[in-house]
Length: 154
Image (cartoon, rainbow, N blue to C red):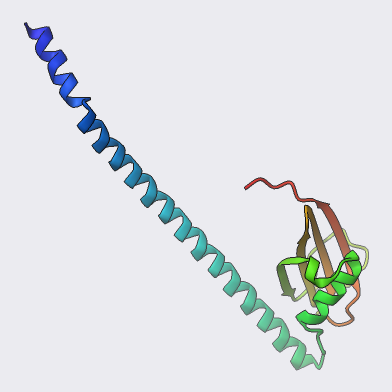
């Protein structure tokens, strides 16, 4: 008799009505978690964009104080497109950052440490190709370029 009671109680716990409620709660938890993760990612991206903007403004201010004229982003886009051999409309620019100096230690064209060498770091895509360029922000000279197949899976 006791075994039949246990089976009956388990049948009630794992009945269709209870399973639907459990599934609804699980779906709600997954939605809230995904929403929180997405919000966190958006906040991190906004924070990184604000930091990059602040750095770029600091570089522009230092250039102004030193009497150095920097090329603008429109010129950087044109230089990048010309270097890659595509039109600007074919490229999708993911990142154009103005930095105070190029931090690549293995580059032969680096000058002394602490020197003011503003550089644009450009990352763009065309089709399934990803391009990274470093462009001197004063002369517009392409300091380095790299291309690879964009095989990142999202």
